[in-house]
Amino acid sequence: MNVYDGWRIVAMLDARGMTRTEDVSDADIIILNTCAVRAKATDKVYSALGRIRLVKKPNALMGIVGCVARESGADAFKRVPDLNFVLGPQSYHKLPEILNDPNTRLFNIELSGLEKFDEMPQMEKSPLVTYVPIQEGCNHCCTYCIVPYTRGREISRSFVDCIRDVEQAAKNGAVEICFLGQNVNGYKYTDENGKTYRLSDLIRTAAKIDTVKRIRFTSSYPTEMTDDLIDMFATEPKLLPFLNMPIQSGSPNVLKRMNRPYDLNQYMDIVRKLKLARNDIQISSDFIVGFPGETDDDFEQTLQIARTIKYINSYSFKYSPRPHTAAAIMPDQIPENIKSKRLAILDAELNEIQRAFNESCVDKTLTCLCEGPDKTGRHLVYRTPYMQQCIVARPDGEPKQLCDIVITAANKASLRGKIAD
Ligand code: 5AD
Ligand code: SF4
Image (cartoon, rainbow, N blue to C red; front, side):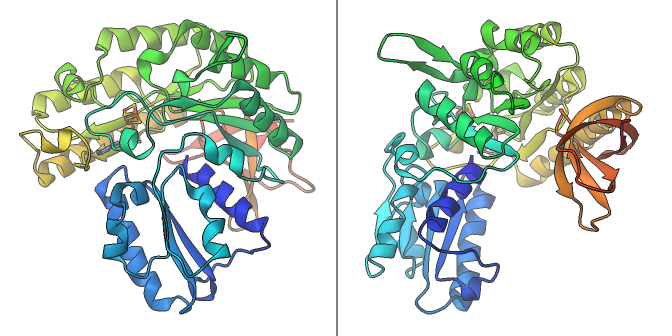
């Protein structure tokens, strides 16, 4: 979502005739697009601001947008007095106001819902993989998560707006569409005639566009994987056989305290249905280790579920207490050294599963999307349907955007392959 927001900000400034620079000391406006999900991300923003203020041009405008702006509020100006603007994740469309009047301070952390989508110019060029946000915010209120505070309650964009964005992206060169939302499979929009649209309707409609070849979505809440959406994996070949469906923990006790009210049988049932719909489907997860009160036994259950489901492309994090969240004030906070130890063990397990999956791809033919040349220029980097990177010797002439690749070798980080004849 932040990458997408970043594109929109760049497009907005491009439209005003501004150009990008790699050199902070050359910039007239410096915008940090920020994440507040863990304390480390927030800390990095303030240390970056400390460095930037020493090297920036004296009159350059400097500010933050996104979740740290919302988390810090007006305190941000106290911490860094030379900030010119502090704009939350739903008010960055107000950025041009500071360009019109550089002598004011711009502050807006309101949750203005979908306003930003309507206010900003459409992008003129679309990358091969284009993100289309379909909903913002989250109603789940997991006890560790700051997102419901920073991005607000869940709100879905209209079906027509979402499809207009897909069509525009396809016209401008997108081959893969990734539908985005904090709780993307919770998408639900009822139009003025009372017709309700779900994510499955968006996928079905987007798939009808000829030049759209691949479709995916992220991030899903397990119990919102409804049957209509699961069916899409059986009936819509353009939908990639890969799904991010975070479990966070394998312990029922921890899940309860996280306020993620599903049981493991329910989760496993959904996985079974997905595999029945498409037997080559793979699932990725996010994990949090060291949640308050997590015992060795709880952690062991997380390892167990990771081995059972064989999650690929997963992310694991040490629990980080966040303001505005219930878990931050729970008793039995876990010491940092135990969190680090558990994270290292889980990461080793996830790497091993990934390596085994990558090796199982050798000799298979996968249809992959070209991301362009690698740093040496001698190879092309392709992306498999499972989001693995696949390196291929660069052929003469223009590379094919989408082509069949025979996988010839694998390690834990990437694949090697050759373009099929
Ligand atoms: N501490 C650690 N990880 C967190 N996440 C969300 N909040 C926290 C937190 N307080 C992780 C979850 C989520 C991912 C985006 O970030 O795993 O799925
Ligand atoms: Fe945060 Fe995701 Fe839980 Fe929503 S479902 S509160 S975004 S972790």
